[in-house]
Image (cartoon, rainbow, N blue to C red; front, side, top):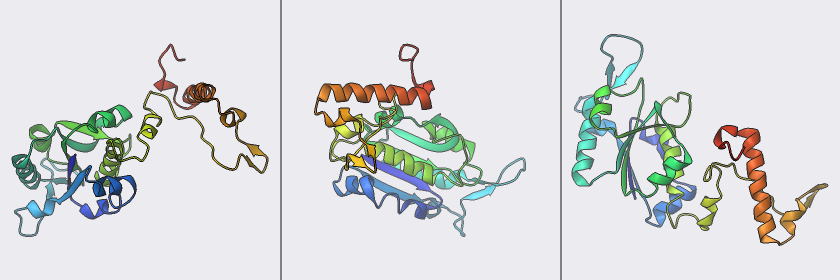
Length: 228
């Protein structure tokens, strides 16, 4: 997979992609991540990529020219499954969205900044708009890092135990059950006996029951009427 990210502040993405699973995925050549500084595509002598909004109002808007030139160059080199814009008014990022994207070959992620991008960018180039929550960040870079992490960890070969991803929260519209490790007794707080029984089927049944219980308590909106 190749992921091209267009950013006004590329330095914000250096640390998230230099550690943990995303780093491992790159070292294994399972994913290529390229961050493009939009100022490199600006035709303004001061490398500006923003301007005042027509009609007035507070805040600046990212201009179309640098973004269009960058996207056009990338699309001339390869085909892309999606051109994604990170924006508060986009579709909510969910596990199912990440699952689908993990099978893609190439995606472009555009990080918004300031008051957003010229609407013509969205009309001409963007094929999918995504938000990570009902709140506003200073820019789309951190949101893009979340999206990339959620996708990359699902690529076969990235996790040491590929089955691990299948038991994550939201994979089956349930939250993950409680997990425990050694010691079995910590200052009188004991691990549930069922987990020490060695009975695989009973353990799986317990985990499912706990997942349903936790989901009912914390995210009942995830459950169907039958599960409730």
